[in-house]
Image (cartoon, rainbow, N blue to C red; front, side, top):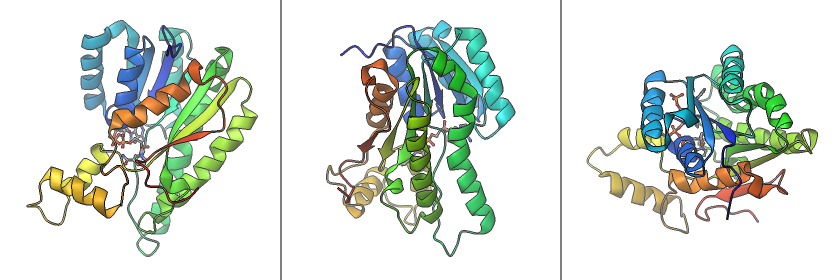
Length: 263
Ligand code: NDP
């Protein structure tokens, strides 16, 4: 299947590791030009260099940006316009989850989490909206979490924020139509830096990485018996961002190995 992305420009936020990096790599493999951002300049530069060596530096723009910083996001949009003359799709992927129960989430933690989840969507969408609309095939594909539909008490504020963001995306799929399609993926557990960090902080430091992941998949009762890989989530994002998904908007694809319990 031709995704129709050859020579098109796609922006990927949170692209220096995990799902975002996998998406950037797949987009470049499809012949697209990619604008990547993340906060950490050093890791982003290293990733851009690797991708440039593999796919050609001329198709890559990498800019350190915190997606919560309005001026930085607007500056990124200006850089994309100057370098590539526009973009057809925005993959809003930057972020991370917060592990905390209601009892141990204070007001500031609530504010921080709600700001991260909402404004990591709002700021890039505002900054790139005109560019996407002008492209004639605009698309936004957002990384969201299964927690939006299946909240977990040990991630109380992330779950709540994820549900709100899913509502926001649904509203935007109507308000931004027909010029921009808006879709999302609902991620269950994908092996990325987030889980590597949790592995490193494990209670039993003698447990191997393979054993820790196997125990996690068993504990979470994942029907496919393992965590997902970043590229498995990225493939769905790239599809939704591409013209191949031209009649899909306001939809979500679950990438969870079957762990959801709702129908
Ligand atoms: P990673 O930690 O591997 O990647 C996260 C990326 O986002 C990094 O490039 C990070 O770089 C960047 N990032 C984080 N915060 C910001 C910010 N404020 N501005 C710009 N870039 C930022 O994790 P994943 O690949 O797993 O995460 C991708 C998305 O998937 C996240 O939104 C996450 O919440 C979501 N998700 C992941 C799940 C999983 O099981 N892995 C489950 C459910 C949802 P830097 O730190 O340098 O900014």
